[in-house]
Image (tube, chains in turn yellow, red):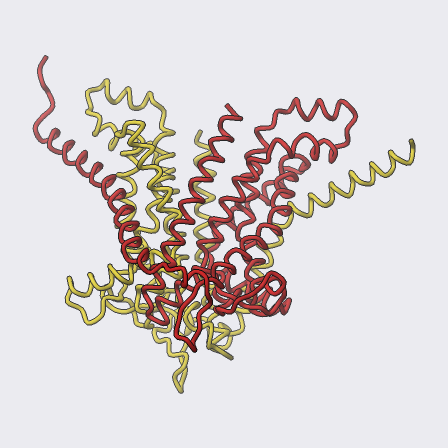
Length: 293
Length: 287
């Protein structure tokens, strides 16, 4: 009897430790990712010099006199993300308003299914369609030699961030207390005015969360962007061929060596920092929203 | 009753309403346009030969069977590793953890993992699994990279499901003298199967659609691998998504790319549907 109890107790202890180990895994992974990125990203930055690396405006990694400035990539990523947000967020927000306030239950669940399906389409498929439809369209509409440009990438990114923008802002709009609306309607505002002047301002923090989430998605997307942006390391221009931070890493990785390879890891480190800042902002907003309740 | 709404207000309201309906209509047209176009371009190119052979330079034929198999291998390997880890982590968070601060840190780490873009996973996977653990560019390295990526999904869905198990079940079991682990194994876990299944479906969705993380970890080879080879280090193989990318971007074979896109779309729909069914089962149980 005593022995059984002992083994049982031992088993309990072992399981406890095992589960603790599983739980700590995510922390371990985050630390692991950070350490590996920092260790492999720092040497190139040191060698090139942080100022030359971040603010150098030419990237010529394979030239005889190589220069490693990633300002074009940073700016392209920032512009591309901003463009995607400017196009994607208004459409997404209006669609969220439709789902939360305007649609009947049947139509609403139909559109919601559509949004979910859009979210499930792999990014390479978006890239493929962008490559075949949007790139030639952009070329002929704007009379360009090549349609693979920042503009095409912005359109593809705008479509790709739609699902998350829609679902997060819909949740936020739905969470606004019914009384706000009723008060506004009772004061004589029309339904549309109520939605735009009362409900949306009240759902502000949730909508900002949606925007920040969209920024995170857009800045981290690699494959779809690689297929439509032309992938030349120019300073960004709307109709020029450009390279993003993500695509800079992906496009040269397979044949790089030496300092060039190390510089690619440094680019990844910069991208990682961007993402961490965005995550941090996201956490702050969510926390503040919770305190407000 | 005097109508006090001015014309300007009416027009503005009408305008905004139209915009809202336009946006909703745009989403629908977007999806149906996408699906229609992909089916139109892809379906005629799906032949039995394409899905049942491997590409042959000698005969000049293209086949995607290796890519289909690779995708399958990666899914299975990823799930086998991530399931115990993710479920274990969720059980720790919901059943064992007493230290509030540790739970908070774990949750923060989980959210951070969920927010990291896949290209970074690809790079770190290359550094850690391909080089550091010298697995070589292989399906195994790709699957392990995806384990880290899908871990947050499994943890979140399992945790949500764990929260729906009534406290009384646990108290009943413990009151009868069961140990904690015995209680979890016999009472709690059977109750959360549906949550775990939902997590699996969502993870499979992520794995099927993933490309950037696999490019440098699982590689771009199109060789046929059997099960024994697939789990060994050093055997590279491209998944359907990576193959699509290679056919479209590097080789300009858009017919094959669209055929793969159709397969990916069908898979995405099946996964979406199963996730919906699993979620409704979960909801019914809760309600």
